[in-house]
Length: 225
Ligand SMILES: C[S@@+](CC[C@H](N)C(=O)[O-])C[C@H]1O[C@@H](n2cnc3c(N)ncnc32)[C@H](O)[C@@H]1O
Image (cartoon, rainbow, N blue to C red):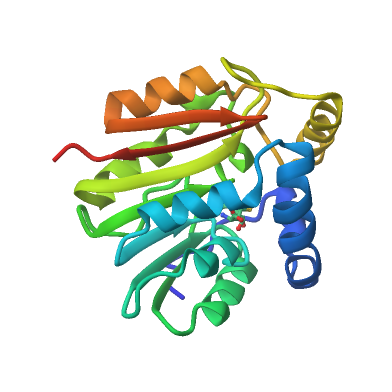
């Protein structure tokens, strides 16, 4: 695991403990909450991975690696995994042992420890809403870094729970859970607006595909060739 100086833990990091990741994440977060609370089924996220993952892929905030496993990368694929918390890195590395895996214990809001134009694809699934920042512009560093490390014509894709913007449908359970997660420091997305995200993508990338499913913005784009 590469880690020049381990990043500081954040309050919301408590939920990425081993037992929670093992017992709760796949069932409660990906299967149930995605579909029933946030309005975007897990299979929609898996579809993005299957369509866009490259042979050399960087995943930011892989969690327990479930979507990467379900993406079925090609044999021989090289997977770079960057996460603020060590346990998701350990767990993803174990589950993806069939591939060449490089892990980075680092903060996505700091410079990424990867060379320019070094990966074919970058995944940012369900991670932007966890990053501290008053709005999408304050978190756009991750898009700058994705644009920097992806090869020209590379794929950048992701999903995030937003709080406002065109196409958003937020039923009261989603509003209540989002408020509770924001109070607990698990989310920081009160200022995350879908239209802002789309604009930030369009100024950096080409071929932007963007859609809001329930409360989840799902996007893919390419770095300029
Ligand atoms: C909700 S999980 C998403 C997991 C996975 N991408 C998925 O879609 O199932 C958020 C992940 O982002 C990581 N994370 C949170 N803040 C981060 C930061 N500032 N830098 C890097 N990773 C972060 C967490 O440790 C966790 O692995």
